Length: 255
Image (cartoon, rainbow, N blue to C red):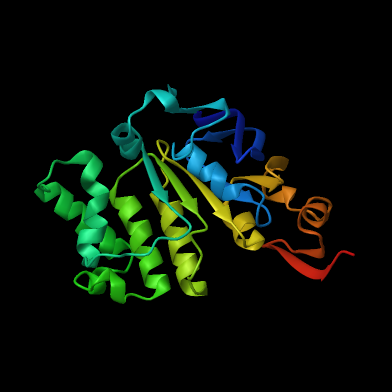
């Protein structure tokens, strides 16, 4: 069953097309990965889906509702968004930073339920020991996990993560992606942009491969084949497969 539907999306920066004729569906219970080289439109697309940029054309529906008909508060109740980068400028504890994710569901004073949701999220994300730390003192990887925890605490049905693996070491990359898998239900879905094709192939049910603002290819993990990767990224690759895994190895740039 379709949770998110995008139809013929169009967007330009200073009259330069960035998203061109992009259409896709995201089903409940699925992780949709978006991959492509720098400048292919991945970040613009994810901002578009969260209503952060004004479209030039096309339509987005989330759980059957047109995105343009929703207020920012209504979007925040349904959509959890983690940008590619965010730097804290004001003092805040980790607990309070994650508590801001509860804002769409509460008034100025958080309820006991809000506080419990934050405590459980911090525990689940392995951040409980950092609850009283100032977010400005965290490493890049720790801050990244706090931002993701804030999105989880928001209790959305749709999760939009833009390069969530940035600044994370291998262990924390796996912990975060496993937590997204565990968060999924038949009433939830996630869209994630990736640089790492192997992680995308391992964790995503479906993939969009983007080039120059368009969808170059779509499908399951098998879409990450040499005939797709080489013209999109401009590198030769070897695909190594065995009964348990599939590994993409770049070998050299194409000339």
